[in-house]
Amino acid sequence: MKLELRGITKRFGSLIANDHIDMVVEPGEIKALLGENGAGKTTLMNVLYGLVQPDEGEILIDEQPVHIRAPKDAISVGVGMVHQHFMLVPVFTVAENVTLGAEPVSRLAVPQWAVRRLHLPALSVPSPGLLDRRRARASVRELSQRFGLRVDPDAYVEDLPVGVQQRVEIIKALLRDASILVLDEPTAVLTPGETEDLFQIMRQLRESGRSIIFISHKLKEVQAIADSIMVIRRGRVVGERPPTTSDAELAALMVGRSVQLRVSKQAPSPAGVVLDVRDLSVPGELGDLAVRSISFDVRGGEILGIAGVQGNGQTELCEALMGLRPATGSVLLDGEEISSASTKDRLRAGIGYIPEDRQEDGLVGAFPVADNLVLDVFDQPPYARRIAMSPDAVRKAATQLVAEYDVRTSSVLTPAGTLSGGNQQKVVVARELSRPNKLLLASQPTRGLDVGSIEFVHSEIVKQRDRGVAVVIVSSELDEIYALSDRIAVMYEGKIIGMCPPDIPEHELGLLMAGATTAGGQGNGSAPHRPDADELLQTAELPADPPEPQAKEFGSE
Image 1 (cartoon, rainbow, N blue to C red):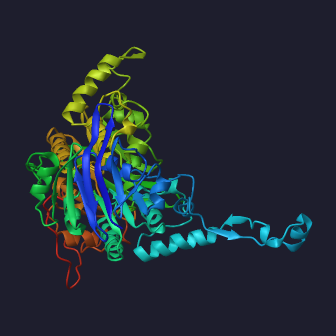
Image 2 (image 1 turned 180 degrees about the vertical axis):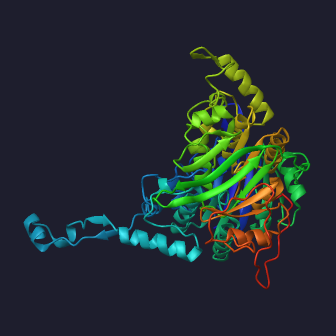
Image 3 (image 1 turned 90 degrees about the horizontal axis):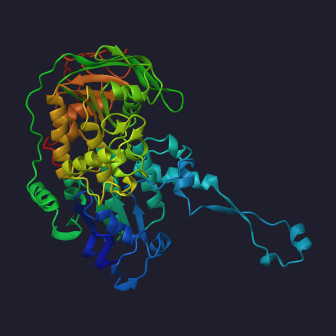
């Protein structure tokens, strides 16, 4: 199916989100859509999917105009969408979410005595149906196995980490067999291996004649998978390029200026230990241990990167350090025991926290941007006078931060939940980096950000380090781990199995992330070990022909 958008324009008050956008997607084409946070990419796709009605323009499929007033209209003409923010029911199982609206039904035969008692011909009696849960689970399991997505059909969505929830969204779209598939930031929470699995799926769909619109901030991804790349800046199309275009040119088109794709930082000058974690264990959702008696420390003026395939305890570790999840063991901040402290007390003690899931843990979507920027300190001067908040002080501070962090919003009074995903992330980052911290705990700090915003956030994190703040970065992006870290801790099955220097070859780091045993004897099955700031990983046991290491240039965000 050929898709054509002509002159699509959408205004939100004085803000023009889409300004007369034209786009053509041929059958069997993967069209990448690049742009800054708030450039209008998601709005354009929401128009295509019927979630937003355009003020001007038309949509054509196979040269015929179509009127898409709601998602059901989009589905009926063969358009499917994987949303940037999950459209899942938390209290439903994976199978129930995936088949919602397309439930497999088993028909029940109506007994003959009932037909006779009703005095109706047998054919006129409707056959009642029940949800066929076995078939629903089988559908999820079959898709999960076919594409290597590894999802339990009986798991409840509210119990799943963010990465697994993203896989559920992908399975849900695949189940409906759309001819035109929109993927809005589908790899934001996927590991490199899972991303490659998704790309294999996309290639199979392209070969079958399906059209795909792929929205991503990761330049190397669109270069690897797209047939053509369209760039949008501030609601307008500023160019269309082949995938052979350089990172630098694509980045400049996106943000309107040249972008530094490498992190500039001096060698660290570590001071005393700020965070000291001893024998920390954290239970998982099913009662097992998600974090297994780990110990490590972080000094002021250094960045510790935590690498690992998502689902190996990183999320639970961050939540335990913030007091959001019960744990056993000891956590000291500047020598003070905080193991039993509340989350509020830990924030007051000087911990800045950028959570993995900005919508669940980082923002109150219904609150204005201004209020979200002071969630940590709203009851402290100058934002509060005795028992009352000072709205003028809150708005003044918010206006400064919105300008400094380039948050794209029409007003600081706009509800945070209405912003694009990248701009929501900027609100969280601005709040946490704008106050004095002893420790910065950042989980996926640049998730959903464009290259210009990533450049800025990385520079701000390095500034925190240079001010003497202890920084812990958890990221599923190896480029980000390499770019920022002064030391790298590798987590596997809830344990830290190695503490590495930042120049460890990428194939060795990948082996550790997969649980490879190190020469030092600390492998998957060894006793818990407490690495310190001076301990470095010895060479891992390598296969005869290790995979080629990838370039460490940070340009893939």
